[in-house]
Image (cartoon, rainbow, N blue to C red; front, top):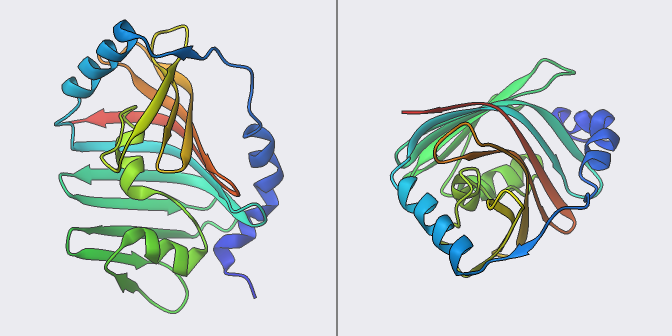
Length: 202
């Protein structure tokens, strides 16, 4: 029997349709673009206290789900709350360098040393949480080499890193520096979609 959270697959066709790549401007990173990105990364290098609210969709090519979420980052500690629109249920993932705790699922809380492995075991979700912490800010993660392509707004359009392709579909350019508002990350068969509704950086 599938976990109740996976019953969110009822909305999966809409999620997958939204994840179909659209035509986008892809400019190779020349010195000017890469220098501007480096300046963005320097400006956000110490942005480790923030709250992000929006919608999350995930898929492993067969099962998946979507719902609202609130992600609070306080230095190396985090709290991620996911709310399902169909069942009204929610779960909470929290932790830091000492491990992760997943609450709200049948069978009681689960603990583990690694948040990504914990979500994979409990939900079957492949979400690159470590790298995503940088990617949601439009930054390259510290997990290894990365390639960048840019849009006509001179902001990252496609980031390829750690086997994932991170497609930035929209940015909030009213902020300085700008922040992404629509992010699709994929590493076949896995897909993760983030739609940002509110950013609060403290």
